Image (tube, rainbow, N blue to C red; front, side, top):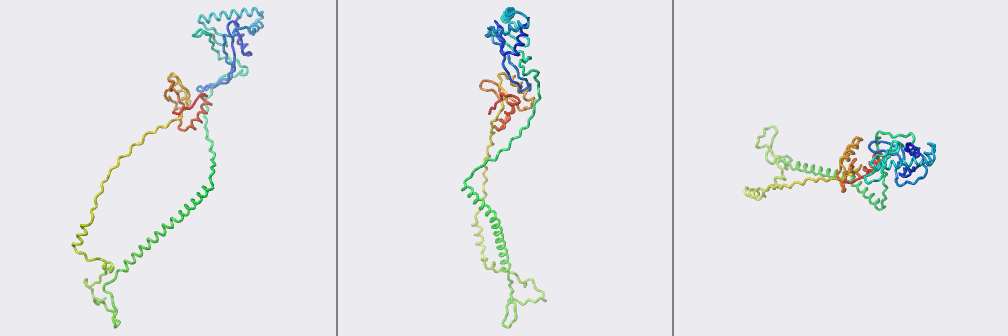
Length: 358
């Protein structure tokens, strides 16, 4: 008779099924699971644990076998005792006792009794008909919420000072071009006055005078329009003011002035040393750590899995103090960007991801 079928049917309705002389199977509720890399969705289930210290007979298994097989209670207990003795002997000899739809019992390194559950069977009735499935990755485009304007409270004195300052700047902007125009107009008038003075200072030498008889005569010679005028007799125009102000300098004085003129020495150009090149400043990055492993091959396999789902910048960022290799999913300069991406990674990929500044 196979007792594993009776144990399996009892686990659907009971949280603990004890095999007298061997141990007890205890079931606990387990929520739904999502694999961060494979995108595997698993429904809620029951986890089965084996406790070898639960050896007292509660009568549950014996009564179930007696009712289904139409046996007496003592006969059912005898069948259970035979099963437990055979299972203990097989485990001591190093064999593995397989229970159909439940799991495998085997001996550990130190002689302890270990159990591995068969995950193909879901003992939670609420999850009946729900199977595990793989879903493709969902791409999300997150938009940052607009920042609220900060309300700054200023003092009344500061507002009055800013108003006065703005008024002074406005008056300066108005008056500055007027001053420029007035300066330009005054400069133009000075230039025109200088030109007019220079033109009025040109006086002809042969100016006419009026005699006592009322006849105008030339002071130097009478010049007639009909007669040809020689080149020597032509009147010349002389700047009277400039001519009176020019002193008669001798050759010796001019030579002294030339000698006393200071010599202009050429300034020597001093070359300034070139500025040192700017040093490279390395900024610290905010890394999203997806896991740390003692074996570098496991870390590299995790990096490949992240790159396959779109994280091309996934890489190793060195060893920690304990010697474990850290796997960076992605890196950011700003802390806020790293925090927002961390929320996405924890929801969709790895709920145990964290941030490292390095």
